[in-house]
Image (cartoon, rainbow, N blue to C red; front, top):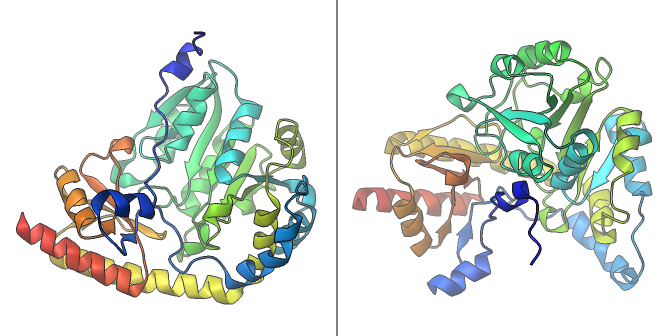
Length: 363
């Protein structure tokens, strides 16, 4: 049998969390609480759900390959040109398109050692070289990333806020970095969780598009809008950058249902506001109880929190599973003593704290 190229053979695939139904079937449990994948516990926007019914009879037709109506509405919301936008099958596809557009075999991409695992996967899949920058305090060190730039560097990935650490790079540091990095290097700022941030020092990377052409801001409808199952993300960049990316974007890459749901979700301010309120109260509750239990955690600006147990988390993870609580080990990130926990509804959070307390006291 023909073998793939060597760098593909050595690639370790991303392993997503198992569906709730599969885990319930495996473990013989019911009513499991999944707080593992940073999903919106409120579910999708009610307006988005309602808008889909009339569209179902037309799914024999190909979707709008240009996302015309969504492009119109989003450009107004963001105050950018329609030609500054590119849409993808989730923000992951936008990241992949960017890498395929601006990197070739042997090129280097710099990223944080605990940044989103898709960045090294995409880089390696293209025959590129991921260059890891240490993250003291689980925060991107922009000075260190800058020092690692070489003539081979073509792309820098910054998740802000970062998954799985929940941390942010602040405005002052990012402004310096964007001005200093050479223009022949593409900076990809992944802002999948930006709507959750409540901090005056958090930078909106769109503010820097006027001073730098080689920058792509990546966002998603999966998190705050609760549309993860429909897969829709988008990128904002210079018109020329978007034009190049569109040349390799697959036609009809965003399905009709996703486009329609996103259109309606953008109008559902009530759902977004309620999501933020539930997330903030849930975050406060978890942090307070984790402190009382003596469990180390990192200040998070997202809809999840990273715990550091100081020991192998798998026994605790398995014990929580038996109690119907699904959280996320993050050993794939090199975080060998950590668990990531998504913020749930109030009852979900209470159940997690109760189960966690019982499991820790049993040890």
